[in-house]
Image (cartoon, rainbow, N blue to C red; front, top):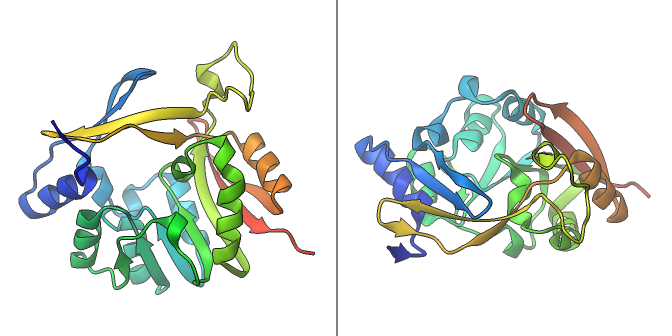
Length: 235
């Protein structure tokens, strides 16, 4: 297989241009293969999980949509809420399609390399904590996010508490059960391994507190998933 191609972008373009419904396959040494149905990335507001709907309802001001994919969240905010949205993704193909779908400001950028910009809402959905990678990266995540937040701004992030998969284990930052290694494939394309973080609400609150943020759990789903609002502590 070819390595390190724009897998999401290739799949998104194929679906948008040719109605090709080939799934993206998710691989992990810890679990059996899973699939991401490509049509799911094009869903409308009414088809989104309640957690995502709640997050979109809470967005305000200037919004940064991190990991926008095909742009479904940002398009709702732009068209239905008339908000100013900057949508970013490291996938150039995804950004191309997001623009073609009508997004006014969609850019292929890495969240961790953004600077000299301010946002009222940073939106991180579809397990938004994933891109943090590991618990040890949370300190730098909070520092970087603080530099991007306007006064009074917030981060809206979802994640899942996977403790239910490990009933005999406990939260241990030295060997945390929410840290995973994944790779993805699509047709003849295969990615390298990458780190992905799931975090419990209690642990997220603990790290937020130690890094100068307040953490409010806005909504909890039926499958151990939750939505958090993170704001910089007031002096």
